[in-house]
Every structure is written in C-alpha cells, then in structure tokens.
Length: 349
Image 1 (cartoon, helix red, strand yellow):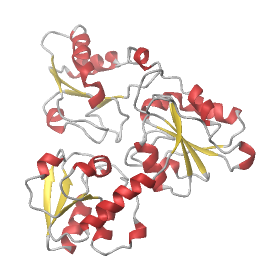
Image 2 (tube, rainbow, N blue to C red; image 1 turned 120 degrees about the vertical axis):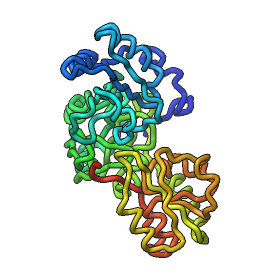
Image 3 (cartoon, rainbow, N blue to C red; image 1 turned 180 degrees about the vertical axis):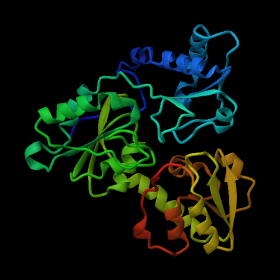
C-alpha cells in the first residue's frame, strides 16, 4: 500500500495546485453567444457551483465583450452543489440559462450545461494506485469510475489500466448519469460491475465512501489527483457516525419530514409514505436545508428525503438527529439495524 503524504489530505502544498488553479477553463463562450443571438436574448442567467462562483464576474465580463449592449447577465447567488441544483427562479426569468461545472442530468433545451473539465494529469496518481490495487493475475479485473470533472480523461484512464494488464469493467449506470463510468454524490450505479475492486479517480472522499457503502463487497481504492494521495475507502468512522444518529433518534416522538423543493432533489412519494405511516410526522418544505433553518422547529428528529449529502456531510451540525429515509425506517423499528445503507438517488426529475 502506498504511503500518504506528510501533509493532510486537504493540504494543497507540494501538489502543484497553485499553478493548476491559475489555469484557463473552457467556458464555451462561443456556444453561449450563439444561443444569445439565436434567441435574441436580453437576459442571460449564469450559475456556478460554490467553488467557482468567484470566477463568475470575469466570465460575465468576457461575454459582455461578445454581445450587444442590451444583454444583461445575471449571476445566480443561490447555493449550487450539482446538476440537480438548478436556480429555477433565475431560469424562469432569463432567456438563456447557463449551468457551469456539471454534466447534464436530463436532456433539456432550457439549460446550457458547460461541464468545465479538469486538466489535472491523472496518470501519475493512477500509477501510484497500482501498489494498492490487487495485481491483474490475482483479480477479476477492476471497475473504473470518476466524476464529471475528469470524464475528459476517462478513455486515457481505461487505456492505462489495460496496458498494465487489467480487464477494465465499466458501465453508464442509470439515466441520472451522463457518462459511462461517472458517479455522483448520490448515485453509484456505474460501479455495479462484475469486479471485486473499484478504482475511483477524483478529488475528495465523499464519492468513494458512498460507493463503498453502496457496494460493501468491493475493495474501493481512491486515486486523488487533486490532493495527490492514494487511500482505501474506509467506511468504519462514517458508519459509526450514522449508527450514532440512528440510536439518538430511536426515542423520537415528533418527526420533521424534509421535502426539498429543488428541481432534481424532491422525492415526494417517499415523503408521503413516511407521513402516511406516522401520525407524529410533519412535512417541512425547503429549498436549502441548513441547521439554522431547522433550529426553530420543535422536533425530536428529522428525516431528509432530499439530497443524501445534506444528511451525511452536515448531519453532525444539526441540533437534532438528521436521518436518511432508510435510517428512519431503522429508528422507528421497521427495519433491523444491520440494514443500514447509503442513501442514493435514481432517475431524474
């Protein structure tokens, strides 16, 4: 197994990231300008994910130079964490709406998706990951997955592993996924392949932890080209946190059932099933689910039918237990504790 850097995994020193963050992204300005001209648009909405919002004014400046003076560009200030997280208010009030940083979750003429692919070289960290993967002669191959930011290198990744002697297994997953081998923070269907090990190439641990929870029988290796580290997905700490939340909610009497009104996150039928089965459950509709917004509700626990990342990423920050629908079923006694699993989304809106 490879040794981790002397720095923490969130530390960008010694990784070359300072230069990489100064790179030029392809914002596909010509495609946006063409849409403006074809529709005679006078209002254009631009939505960026949180990590790229600072680039919004510069992109707007560049676009202003390419269109007529009567075109107004509007930057979305709403939080954005994925392709499911569209600013529908702004989208309805603009002639052209552009969503940067994510691949399309659903084919639509209403949104221009600009994925913003990363130009980070993935091969060095993949070479290091070979030390942690089972060798080709001792395994049934390897599943290969990544995020939208690195899909431009997917064929290169596959070829590299094949040249090293591996049989590479990949699939597209379901209709929520745009590309073969792509995973989302809420969907790991692309990892459902006939291989005992999966290589995840991408930044951070959330995606591979969810993958490991969804597929506990698989050995999940993380090759992170952003933080320049190779690790193995270890769900033990994550599971302890989730078990703790479930146990704290077992004595709850009043439940707040969160229904997220964001276009790609609402699971209305699931929320209704919980309400129908529990007279002490109350529906709370929200767009952005945050601890501060729920603090004034007199509930013993909450169950979130919206984005799973709200529960798993921010769960400890809520003043009362925040559970996924599956965890809720365990807390109220409908399912045994050993059935605890990661909450995933399938299908589009």
